[in-house]
Image 1 (tube, one colour):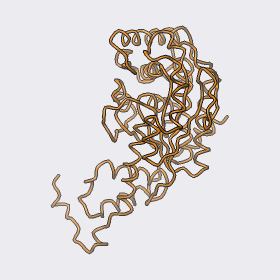
Image 2 (cartoon, rainbow, N blue to C red):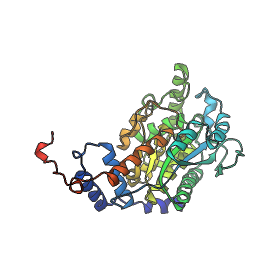
Image 3 (cartoon, rainbow, N blue to C red):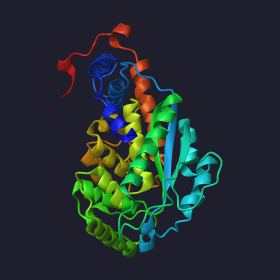
Length: 355
């Protein structure tokens, strides 16, 4: 099975290139560690790629789209039709991710994994597993077989991009109502209460927020997802696009390509991916801290530090697109800054550096 083969292919970071990258960073004309996370990112890329002087080439953001039966419970102010209606704006370059992806020089890859209606727009990859999930408040979102298939759609998409020469992947999502299953995933895998895991999502007032909390409680009680079995969690309370995004992470890790996590939805996918194969966490970079309640909890659960905090909560991959500039900056620092010896300068003595 593709899923099993892919998880088995994911290895550890390469230690020697990381050590070489760190040694070079420490030799550059600056106090050691003074560029903070940029240095950490550069070392991580060396470990992922096996190259102590990694460079970035082609970039892509994979946006997975799907609908959710749970919208019947009144958990979203936005109508479900917006999922399908928004997709053309991505590819026309006029949505938020269209603008920021273009600025980052990243190609957008839009995948229909489970939109409720046919998506007939040029450029959209039709990988529909089924036309939306079932209502998790009354039963499972999908079958276990459909959960596996959604993951494999993501793996296949990541592999295709890597074969095209992509060196950096970002994640994006589209699916009205998808903060509710993401909250359920956080609660199930992380052991948090529905109140701790559930945020407002899009345009949600206090009344709708309380309804979302009750629906997450109900979904967990009705379905009883097994926290030790990520496939069970995905099938019972997840989403098709969330499964596909988890698959993209696994595919990227197997192909040794760094992957930028976006906001709340994609980090729910990251939790699933790590539950399926813990080693894939080392291949992820957290782009930003979402304004969505629960996102900080997700990142802390995964041990990931966000690069940006702009109180964004749009999704679509917008945070990942912005973080691509910082990943590029990290690589350029490693490759383009001069060392003390290259400049003929005296190196800083450790005793001179403030602790």
